[in-house]
Length: 115
Image (cartoon, rainbow, N blue to C red; front, top):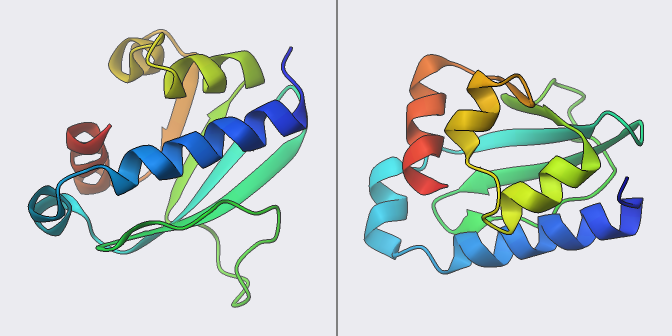
């Protein structure tokens, strides 16, 4: 089991990976959404915001408006790190039940193109 700090570092790496996506691709596939990543084995939730400019750094503070996230990811710590490091395929993890995403179908399609 990874630590909270290791998960925080993995999410920071994910933010950096989103920064590397071509601006044209981001403009084509990104719609502004709030994102939560629940790391179930650590009982911690990280919050972020996806927008045309990229992905904001994740924090442990929910959005100020109190609304639920548009895209909710549930994952265990080791799988989060493997996913960000490219060692775990998102589609296979979803099909295998290792990752759960609660989002609209359109958001799932957009995210799949970006991850």
